[in-house]
Image 1 (cartoon, rainbow, N blue to C red):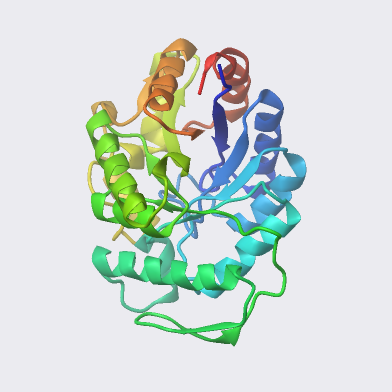
Image 2 (image 1 turned 180 degrees about the vertical axis):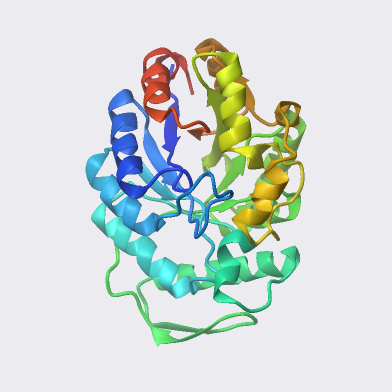
Length: 329
């Protein structure tokens, strides 16, 4: 059977850049297939404590690891113009050919509001993202292009540093409308762990959009980011989730919350039972293996795992030894 591709989700919200780079290298040695990291300007809560610049971290991580590299997810709409995102992604692919991909999302106020201005509702944010994808795709062509659209303007320009092949663009979503448009306009899909019926809905809409665009959805990658909590005891795994990743137990939309301090106040209300059905908390590696295998069996091509606690080194070693070798694509 084929070996499953299980990557390391490097949490720049929880660990400083030097520490996270050491963890990426450790994960690579343990058998993880690559690294993904989200583009955060702030952590979710003050306790998490970090927010380094994703492009610099991934550039160094590429030299210390052998697998794929994904800025997943970055928002090309508010803090950074799509042209800058295109330049960053193209440069990373030149540095590490055939190893990178570009994950895009519609943004969260936590990160994007720092530049000021009006924070739009979700439909406008999604439309901005797809117009940004149009600009990025134009620039990846290598031609001189300009753009004047509803949300963005770009003077005539081109990217001067270009890879032989542009990195694929994957869109992060858990909703039906964006999933369908992702199938139409992107190269693949990123989503998070969810009940089977929700994943089937997202897959179905993604496939529908791809077929409408004349593409074969079976050849388009489907990537999962999976949050979990492993520790040496169940009690410690639960404690780590509540203390270090309370946002995983918040059962509401978080896109409009601007401050880690506001998240901190909400985190005080999070209880262990709030994670039920949302995140596995266990000391048993076999329980985690079965959970990860379940998502592989549902059709995900690659899974990036985030262990929410501070015990990263011990977790990487245990999963590299007891979990990864027993997963199959």
